Image (cartoon, rainbow, N blue to C red):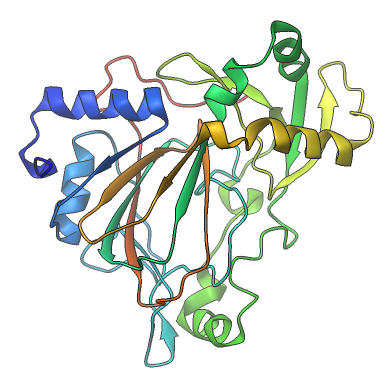
Length: 287
């Protein structure tokens, strides 16, 4: 049985952050937490994001409910009804601080598998020539034109989602007042300094070399990049059981899952930086 995270010392929180940063993810079992306790535990590692959407309980705005459950005709949480493509949470935006995402399992679905791919290790295994090639590329991410349809493919849930408050769910460059349209495909992690791929395939729309020349045959380029990163050797797979608490670094990893049979499956999601556990942490700034 794992030690309860509420009993961690400051040094143990730092060790946990180091594990997440070095491996891309970490899992704790048998945690038995309330939403408020989960939020409080994460504040020991960094500043926790607080939101005010329909999936954020008023008594714990640091928690986003991830579930397909519908109550009184309204969705109670975020939910993609079918298989999701590789993605990272919240980082279709260019500028963000909440690098780490925590997922706590309140209601399990043992038929569903979450997969995580380590984009840092995928880059490190390349030859120096290949690394230099990818270091020389900037990419364009676009989440403004329906490029990621997580909710629209299920009529029942889609209506419940709209009823719950889709019109208030603002995302993208205009809402976050971002002015840039490109970022490097390869960047250095602000804590470890390790280089990592940042493809965000569901938002990836174009690529250029550093001199401004457009990458030839973008579709072929994207397919090859996909094959380089999504090799089984770089993957970790997890079936959530009640009480599991999984952390993922959203720079060095992407994740996806299989379809969910039990729509009452419920995860509690947090997002935070590493400012309380890593002394030399600096915010991510892309130029």
